[in-house]
Length: 267
Image 1 (cartoon, helix red, strand yellow):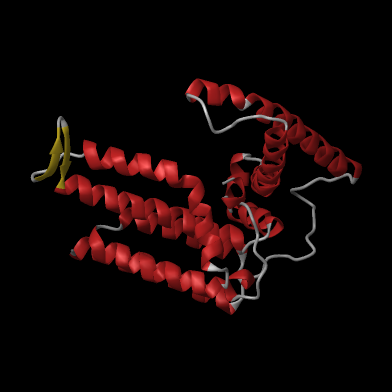
Image 2 (cartoon, helix red, strand yellow):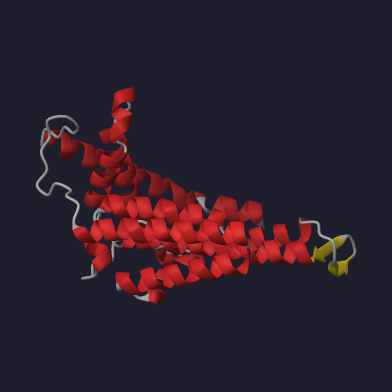
């Protein structure tokens, strides 16, 4: 389960999405998320499905690798579906068991909410899987550039977000190793009630936090030893420059959002 989480991982491939400017991918991801909340009814979600399939094909990332990350949110997905299924009122009752009612509106809302959540995870994964942490930092810093006028430490914020994203796969791998080591020593993370399971996590969390602090301290010392400083006056080996494909990607994202808004207004 731990290794199934793909958030923060980079999948190297020779695709047009990997070659796009990180600012384009960040903006397109925000547009896709906005479009999902704009979507209304089956036509909107059908358009989102077609767009997402095209993006996955262009990324050249195996579909199985991308879907593997959904295993980590199965519990959240089930809770969301159950809450919307039983707690959403509607005009027509489909099934009633004691005080629990499943209405037509509740069923439709639960299905759309599940689709939206899955598409959010997959769409965000496409961005992280096709963008290196360094490019992601540069893209965030350039997009948040106007905030410098408000004295927001843009470079520091972008760097912290990038480092946090980069550390996710490392910490997940460390968690998997510690869990296997504790299981070999007789620890049980599966059986028992909720309180017992929480107590069993202590031998896992303590070494994990120690390892995380040690890694963070090593990274800070390495950056300080190299006299690292960001922001003003710092040059870049690969400055971000827009190409023709980037403008075409902006146009495709804008067209997709326009289609989603049109479908919501018309239908």
